[in-house]
Image (cartoon, rainbow, N blue to C red):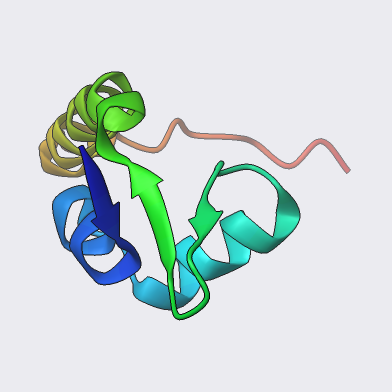
Length: 76
């Protein structure tokens, strides 16, 4: 199933500009039909799962309290 850049950006929760940049860099394979880029959505299922896992991990890390500062003595 082919989707437009806007649909892929919404699916991955990324900006359209970022998706266009990745297409231009060759990181995303796309077909240009004369008007717009079309991308095979199936190739991003695994990628979306990894992005979602990373977002959950980052959210959990942000909720963890910072460790207390250890008392460093100045040895001068």
